[in-house]
Every structure is written in structure tokens, then in C-alpha cells.
Amino acid sequence: MTSLPAPRPRVTLPDIAPVSWEHPADRAALQALRAIPGVDQVVRKIIAILGGERGIRLLFQGNAVRCGPTQFPRLWGMHIENCATFGWDRVPELYVTQTPIFNAGAYGVDDPFIVLHSSAFELLDDDEQRALLAHELGHVISGHALYTTIAVIMTLISIGALPLPLELLVLPVRLAFLEWSRKSELSADRAELLGSQDLAASMRLFMKMAGGANTANVRPGDLNLEPFLQQANEYATQNDGLDVVYKVLNTLVLTHPMNVVRAAQVQTWVQSGAYERIISGEYVRRGSAADDRPLRDDMREAAAHYKNEFTEFADQLKTAAKRATDRARDAFNDARSKGAV
Image (cartoon, rainbow, N blue to C red):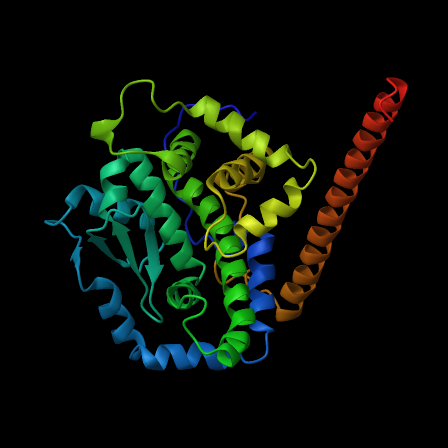
């Protein structure tokens, strides 16, 4: 298990390029998405239907309060601090919207903005709110907002709402957007930690997204981080029987990975030493040669990632099948020795 040290004074990361923290699976999934025939036409068509940038902004901000120095000033102050941490001069607009569904998002086309649901604002303490805001800012800096917007719109079009021929045409694009959306969260989770620089706050955020309740209804001892981290470790290592298949099927139509998976992924990233290297100043700068990655590099990494992912999945299935066979053989031999067969 990863130890959770006390947060230290935060450091700034001037001109940090998103490639410094982006998860390989994020870039791989995005390139796979862009490679689907017709996906660009679908994106353009949806944007046109929504009225372009202005229509998208109105769609998401219609029932929201825009934050600023005199409107949710504490939340706005944390947002400004996060932008300073990343050296991001173009501060995205920030809104709080009234909804009981815990969520937040970064939306838009050329001028992204961030929306925080009121339930998240009520559920989280200051440190957790800072982490959530850093997560959404990470989406903005990585250029996720456009594709996130399209992914949200496509999930609103329920399966079966379209005529069957059109649904069959759109389904691969929908699934590809959902796959990328899940992978993009792994990148933003890393940005969340880089912005907050508080691992415990990030882990508590995952825990509360998984099963939190309004702070007024939570008694002391109701939510404890250590058992949640143990749960995350159990989920990550549970690959027995059909567990591997169920994990894939359970996440196929989700926009986000499961929260215990996200917690485990962040811990693995910290354990790799990558987080400490970035905090120490070892990262790619925006506009540098390393930041200007050729498309062929992303495509090569995409192919390698999915090959590794498929190989790992196949190995897990093979191991699970072997375990099932061994158990069946042992049960049969045990029954035969007792004269049952």
C-alpha cells in the first residue's frame, strides 16, 4: 500500500506541458478515436446542431452561478491558485450549478469553461475541492474539453432512441468516445494530484465520489481512507474466474473508470517516482521540442498500448481458466475418492 505523507508546501510548475502527466492510455485512446472513419464528421455535425461554441456554453451554463471575487470567492481563489501552479494564464470561467448528482466537468470548444455541481461543493472539504478543480483544469490544459463535450452529448442519446440503422452506425463512435473518456480521466487524475500536491486529499476525493454523503449526514468514523485503499488494492488484484470479463463489461458504457481503479492508478503512478520527478522540476515544458510530439509517435504508442492491454487481458483470462479447470479437477477427484462418482 502507498503511504500518505502529510502535504508539504505546494510548488509551482511553470510552463508544464500536459504530456508530462498524460496517461499513455489517454493518448492511445484519443488516437484510436480519431482513426475511426467518420468521427470528424460526427463531431462537426454535433457542434453545428448545438450552435457552436456559444450554443455549448449556453447549454451548460443556463442554470449556473459564475464564480468570481464576489461569487463563491473561496472556490474562485483556489481555482486561481491552481492556474498559477500550472502556469496557465488563461483562467477558465468557473460555474457552480444546482444538481444532486456529484460531478464536475470541463466543456467548450475554443474557450473551455469548468462546471462544478453543487453536490460536489457540499460534499468536499477545501482540500478536496482544490483537487477536484485541479482535475478539471487538467482536462482543459490537455485539450480534452471539446471531446468531453461530445462524449457527454452522445451519452445523453440513449441506446434505442435512434433508428436501428443509424444506431448501428453511431455505436462504434459512441463506444470509442466512452473508451477515450475513461482513459482521459486517468490523465486528469494525475493533474489533480499535481495541482493539489496532497495525495490524501486526492484519495479522499475518490472515496467520496464512490460512496460519500452530505457532510451533515456523515458521522465520525463513517468514512475511513485506509479501508478504501485496501478495497482499491483488492479490486486491482482480483482476477479470478470471470472477474476479468465482468470488469470489462461493467465499464463498457461508463464515461469514467471506477473510483477504486482511479485511486489504485494514482498510487501506482506515485510509486513509479514520476510524480516526485515532476514536483522536483523534471518535466516537459510547453512549446519545447519534447512537447511537439509527432503524430506517428502517438500512433505507435497507441498500437503498443492496446497490444499490451490485450495481451494482459488474454493472460488474465488464461490464468482464470486454468484456475477454474484445476478446481473442477480437484473437486471431481475429491468426489471420486469419496465414492460419489
